[in-house]
Structure formats: C-alpha cells, structure tokens
Image (cartoon, rainbow, N blue to C red; front, side, top):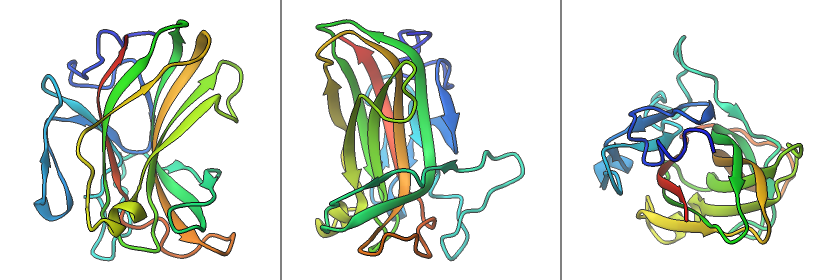
Length: 211
C-alpha cells in the first residue's frame, strides 16, 4: 500500500499516496451548513475533504476557477431503491483513490468518515466506499453506501458525526480503494433532471489504516 501507512492520518498535509478526481484537499477544520458544526481531525492535524460546497454561486451552481479540477463525472453511479423508494441518479462529485492496495486475509481496513449535506429534496447526494480488484475497473468487488442526504433531511440533520467504518475481505484483496461523494437526485423517471449538479455535499475522511 504505497505511502498510505506513512500518510494514514494525512499528516503530510497533502494527499500523498492517493489519486483524485474533482476537488479533494486536506484541511484542519471544516464547517457544516451555516456553521452549525465545525469538524476537526479525529487524530493528528489534518483530514481529507472530498468536494467543496463553498465553491458555488448564489443559485448553488458550481463555480470552477481556471486552476480547479473539473468535477468527477459520476453519472454511471445509480442505485435503487434509495431512502425514498425511488432511484438516485448521480451527476458529478469527487473521488479519492488509493491504488495498488493489498489487504491480507484476516486483516481489516478501517477509516473514519463524516458526511455533510448542503441541499434539500429531491436532491439526494450520497457518499460511498468501493474496493476494486486489480484488472476489474468497472464493477467493484465490494461497495458500501455510507450516507444519503435525503436520509439526513428526514432526520432534520445537516451532517453526520465522525463515524468509524471497517471492511474485512473474506480473502486476500489486491486492487484499489475509492471513496466517493456524489451529487445526486432522487427520481421515479430514469432520466437526469435539472439541478442534480447543484449545491454539492462533502465527505470527510481520516485515520485510514489496516489492522
């Protein structure tokens, strides 16, 4: 697992050992919607932030500056049923990936995550973790949906707390790990709808480790 053991808490102050699509960075604080919560690292001085809800105009549309990366294209990600019993269609977002990872049989991958929404229904932004075996880039061996913004909205919440997640493969795993946050929209019509790319959510990550 190149670099990851040295940078598992992002203590280099960068994303060494990872590749990115869309807006990904490290931070030492991050504010939830209207400052309702300020997040700090679980451990150490830094954590990773996937996507940036602050980079929008007054209508919530993305503002991409000349040096900013384009959002990750995520329209291939859909799932049914979502928390509303409909289909969520992803539009764009951000991906943090660690390639060439080996997890031995009996080992577990651990990480801390938090999800923050900045929009209302029918938007259904979501965060997920996926593990892709080497040579199988299209379909993950394992995936887990961490959070949906509609679920938080129904609970009258704008963010989760830091949560711990673990994955223990049933056999030796060699491949890449991806953490994804996506703009999405919940619909009964299997077509993209206007507004699905507005007001992105954010996924925070910290303390990635093998145990």
